Image 1: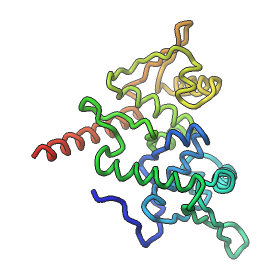
Image 2: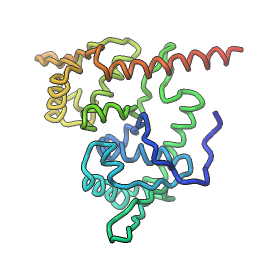
Image 3: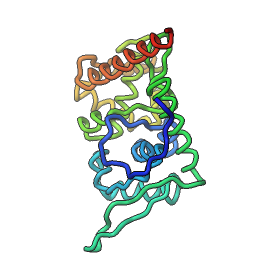
Image 4: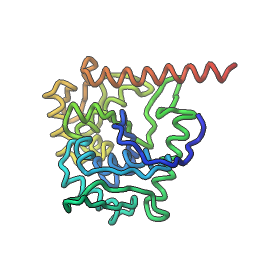
Length: 252
């Protein structure tokens, strides 16, 4: 596929299948802000200037409208992640906001990183790296299926589960893995320990995983028969089939 070229149209309001959260954004701004940036820069990286109602993002990320407004304003003004322009309806209420890249601040870096991500993704890795013939997650970003948010109704739980699922598709795949401590796992997930354990308890109640703690660390056992794991497994398998096809074509 050719490199991304700017388009002379506005972005559609189509709901994405996956969100690609830059790991650095999760670490610096948190999961929700990273998800907002991921959705917007999917379009901005293609040369579009998307219009979004706060309620659209609220529905997508399972949060309330006021939360979206507060976070998007902070991302625009405090963190300089994009330009943001409000529109007003005839009844005096706020309408959709126009989002666009700026020449400086974090916006320039974000646009460059997402353009590089999508160009390399389409041409070579397709949102997954090939290691020892297998597809694994690229460490620069987190692949978060929107279906996880829809099912769990909590974007941070969805993010955590997606991160844990990706571990099972590593070079040494296993549904059971161990971390030396709760703090180490929390640091790897960019969460504090209390929040991490609360989410693990909730995911265990929903039968997506089991976890146990001891003086030697924390052990997590993923339920490989859960519907969301099957969804992720299918997605990774499709990427592997595509990878093998590209490799075959490259050898001819």
